[in-house]
Length: 215
Image (cartoon, rainbow, N blue to C red):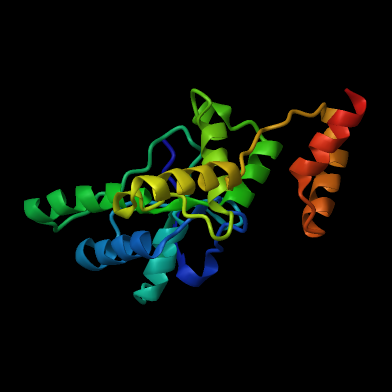
């Protein structure tokens, strides 16, 4: 068995993912930061041949904040699992780490624009079973509306306010759909989409109007 190539590089040599659909929040950043402080680096990240981070952007960002300077890179081809053998933690620390490691992603969220664009470029359905991707995009698209609370404070409202708020909420929340294009039309459609988006056009309204004209 050939020994894997291992090298140490400066953490500054790694580049963050330019279009990361996963957005860190102050809460998720705090969990990662506290975990690194308390337990040190306990898990691997993933980079490509150009040292662009494909998984672990939040970990590297917080490691830089804490002054960590070096990264060990293990060259891999995907046919073996790369495990980090972390030494020196107590059983109590391991119990805490398991929770910290699994809660950081819970406090993160998605970037609607990037996720929506990626969903048009590649098939993501295998990673979002049972139409969960469309449901997620609908939720994220709705939350982008200014002045609309995705989770209205119904507890502190009377019945009349609840009815009015619910009606306003349901009528204003935008919803998203995924549209399939033939391979030879995709590039043209993407250019038109990007152009309309830059101009601030409501693409949904344009689409409905065009469909009405031909159907």
